[in-house]
Length: 212
Image 1 (cartoon, rainbow, N blue to C red):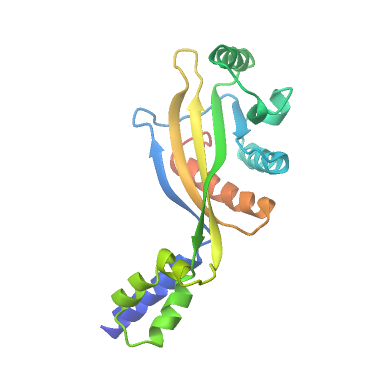
Image 2: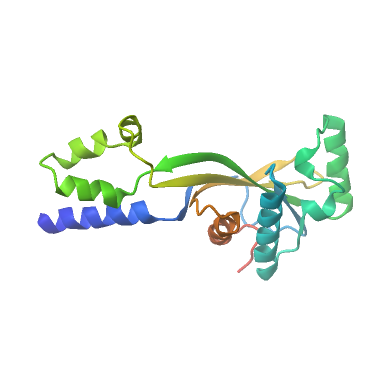
């Protein structure tokens, strides 16, 4: 029994230390392997430097895997994210993309920030108390600790990446969407590099863009 408890504590500590992971995803059930002739990478980030880092990093990673891609920063005359686009204008953009042989769009954006505590810290405090694990764990969740004035250990960035098909016979069909949690290193280049590694793994696992 002691061995089981010890193993459970080790697993919880390891989970608390994960710096990047896929937390949820959806894949169109009608899609098997999807390989694009040419994919456009779009970062929906209002910060110019962050947008450049994101598109440059993902472009380089996909090109290494043999995927023919181009950044929105290179395709559009001005940043895509900063333009107010009407439905008619958007349809014209799609037409331009099709004429330039694009058949897929990969979109990435930050959808949230979440404050977290290290599980290891929680367990250390538990070992010094006489409470049951359940009592201590639920008493020390984020909302409780925030009310007590505890300082957060780290911040998680939640990235969402979506892959769309813009094939002539289909209207912006969603192929795949995934959400990733990345431990914020307070350095966008490091954060995007962690996202890139997870993204490549997930695309391969789902037979998307990358052919083994």
